Image (cartoon, rainbow, N blue to C red; front, side, top):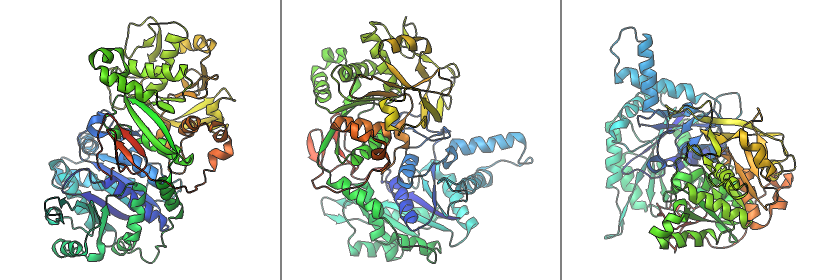
Length: 602
């Protein structure tokens, strides 16, 4: 097994996750099989209980693991299926060590960070690295490890020590360290400054790790004299220093690495030159260029709670992008804060209220993503009502499906106090109820999690057709509440179709309105399995319906053969109404209530 470690210096948010994913794509294009591990030094056991404002979205894996969003990047870029153990946290390591100590596995020794914690980290990496993640039986050839945080952080010290020991454990030729660092340009002098990177590399060396390769983040390509200076002071060969400058499309990062021959540098460090093939990135290049040149827009409103931070809905945004590219449309996302649609906001902040409704009424389709808590719920219900009554394509995910059921019960069944027991425990008409197997005392890892089967019971439904008329689908779940089984019959008689259910037939998985152009809700999260070139069927349906092309997409051949073509046109992003380069490089996104956080994101 060969290991590539990606670390970050100077500041956080440099794009280590995209860099690690892009390295994986490049090595995979060279004929190697690749797996990934993300190390998060925080004390949480997993990301499940963390606020999206703290750490972005919680990504859910097939096995139910609630993990860092970077594992979503790995899965999307490499088209692999990771496990919960591919995300290592300080909490997991200490929990593992303490459990061993309680069993007496340390034979009376004084349990210490070195060697017990550091050994546990190394053993974990070696164990997880050999788990196949690409459908094959044998272990991968290369494991790309990303160390979260920034070099010098106190909480990452045990991992730095462990990885230093690990480089000696696996031996020369089996370990390559790629250090991602910032080379800023000061506006006053207009010069690329190398000192921050010099200090970062020196600090890393002082902790026992030596950089083999430098991946330098900057606003523009590094000048030759700057690279020479970095080579001299960081003790890294000139040909092993690469520049990852700001570009409007992160799908170009693997291509940027290929142009600079990063695969050759990595292969030399890992002694892979004899088996490495020339990178084959034709399909990837075509997709990136197609995305750059789309010009016919499709406008989607994302009505949510965390619209000020796009990372909170990262997988949703990527799934919308994948579907838009498949439909040859340029994605425009209008972020609509759900609470701004509510009557209370009309009184307290009429400007925000009018702006939110103006956005909602100007879109081609509406998406209500998952979430927790009661803030903004009434606004989401109003959005679902607007989409239903005005025949606007609608997709509700998890909570988005549940609020669609509540709205239907209120408006069609005239159950005006219909609600979820999550928001109003005393409601007389509980449309959504707590699942009996859930825990009311412990939050972490107690939801219905992971990949589970949903069986179609309405064969001619739009969702069944979008999934290629399969009898069932495997999608990932993350929820505590479900549609009340006692109300299903009443809702069905009123015209709400439950197109798919779980294996027991008692848990509702997909809702539809048959007499609506496209009104679908899913209890699961289809965004987690969407991939570039393999768009999620439900997201594909939403985009196609928003473009008036649903009938074409519901043809199974159209779903499974998304050929790439080229078109021309510029690409911009609107930040608070101002045209700018796209922050994530993959779509036009309108940040009406948020901020643009740089051109190159995780």
